[in-house]
Image 1 (tube, rainbow, N blue to C red):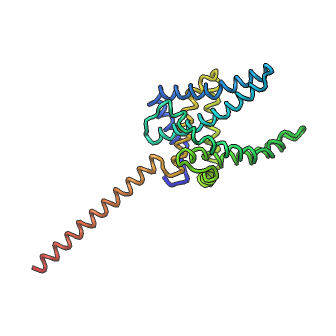
Image 2: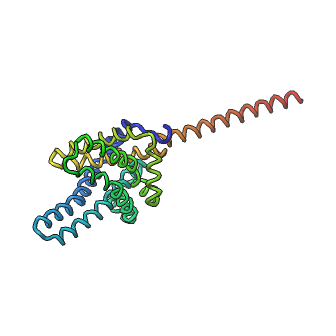
Image 3: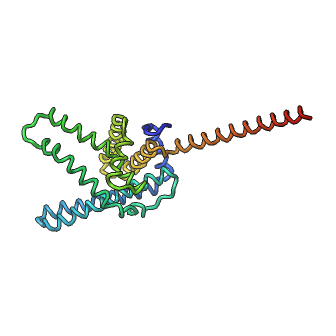
Length: 257
């Protein structure tokens, strides 16, 4: 498969196969990551509701930090599954050192999004205008959807990660949008099943997303197989050339005698 392209079906199938082969650890990762991201948010909501604003802000900040670290950890886990590496629960926290880089990018994204969000909040704004204003926000989300993977996979800087994500997604907007809609739909079904379904659907879609990244970055299993095939063909060609040369040399020696 060529670089900067991917197969939705292949990624979804890889995610499902990986889930079947690693059901136990993936369910555990889904459960722990969900609790880590939901509990601080619940405590913050409870504190604000009880009128303890200071404590509410503490839990809010804690939620931001934990969510960022867990998100980066899940990206790492998805990539490890794609690369055939052993995954453990501790991998959820393994990318804590990238928190500041991740935070910088999220701040940039929020700053870019603020004008659009403000316009959407204008009272009496027609719904059609609201939908039109959402388009650039959706476009931006798709273009930046792989910055976290660049941070984790290559330890790139914030701006380098943004640039690479934009390059990787070039010409793939509609295909990536379709993939996102499918994965959001899968997780929505998991959410409907008393939220418990997310324990299964979130790690499944996480692996599928990592596989998409591996495909478009040219490092998927299929691209590795293509590279191996290329070198195998090249080696076979060299062997044939060598045999022909030896035969010609033998014939020349016979004629000389």
